[in-house]
Image (cartoon, helix red, strand yellow):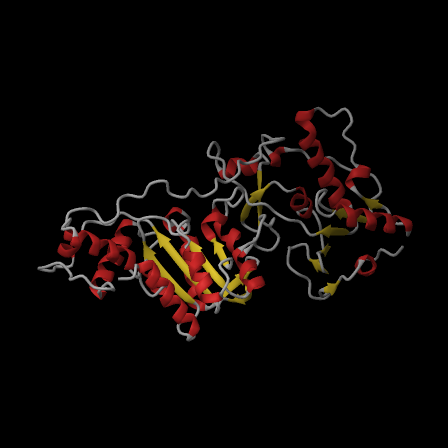
Length: 424
C-alpha cells in the first residue's frame, strides 16, 4: 500500500495535469512537520518538474523581522516600511506557479491561515498590502499542515457513535474526516473555523487515517493518534518599541513664535531613503533664488542638552512648518508601532514614542509630525508626484504626474509652487 504522502503527491500531480480544482488546496493534521521530509519539494518536482518551486511560509514567518505575518506574505501596506526578503506574493508573481507550504500552521496568527485559504479559494493574491491590485494563483498548490493532539482510535469511534471501528481502507471515509474537522475546531477554533476549513474544501484527514490504520493493525486502540506537538515553530518576536528621546507630554510643549521671514518651500524627507533626491531639489530651488528649508542646513542644536533635543526639535519644526509658504514631501515610510507592555498605547502617544496616523498607531515619525502642520503639499513618490490637501486627502486638481527623471520632479515642483503664488 502506498503511503499517504505518496498518494498526496500523485493526487496533486493529476489535479494539476488535468486542470481540476485550480489552484489546488490541501489542509491536513499531521504528527510531524512535513517540510523537512521533502513532501513539498516532491510535489513541486512531480507537478512542475522543478523541486525548487517551493515557498516555505513557515521559514518566512520564523525569519527575524517578520513580526507582521500578513505583511510578510503579501507585502507592507502602502506608506509602510517593506519587510526584507521575498514576500509570498512576489514569489507567485515572479514564478507564476509553485508549491506554497506552511508547517505548524497552528503556531502563527490565525490571519495567516485565513489569508492562505482565501488565496487558494479565490485564485488571486493581493499585491503590496492592498486588494486594489492582485496576482493570479491558478498555477499554485497550497499545502497547509497543522499539528494538533488527536485522540485514540477508540475515542474517535465513540465520538462518531459507531458500534465498531472503521475497517482499514486506502482512504479515510467521510465521517472520519468529519470527526477530525470537529476535533480541530474544538482544539483550535481560532485557526479552524468553518470559513477556513471550507475554503480548503475540508480537512483531508489522510495522515491521521494512515496512523489510525497502523494502530488498528497493532490493536492499540487506546493509543493517542497524535500527541501534543513538541518543538513547534516559533513566530518571530516583534521588535521592541523605540524609547529614545522620550518626552513626558508632547502636547504640553509650548509653541515657540518664529518671527523670521517664512520659507518659500519646506522640504520633508528621510535621511536614510530620500536624502539624495531631496538635496538635489534643494540646490536647484536655491539656484533659482527661492528660500528653502532643509533640516541639515537650518536646524542648529548647539548647546542643547541631550534630554532636551526632541523637545527643541518639536518646537522649532512646528513653528517653521506652520509658517512656510509651500511644502514638498518625499514620500514617507511608516513603521508599525510595536506595543510596549510596560505602558499603555495612550501613554506611548503622549510621550512621543508612537503617533496616530489615520487612526493607526505607528512609531514616531518626523515626517508624519511635520505633515500635521502643513497645508496643501506636493508629495514626491518613487514614480509620480501628486498633491495632498491640508485634510490629508488627494487633490484631483493637480492630478498624478509621472516622474521619469529629476528634471520631471523639478518641473512638477515648480508648477505646484506657481499654484501657490511662488514664482522664482
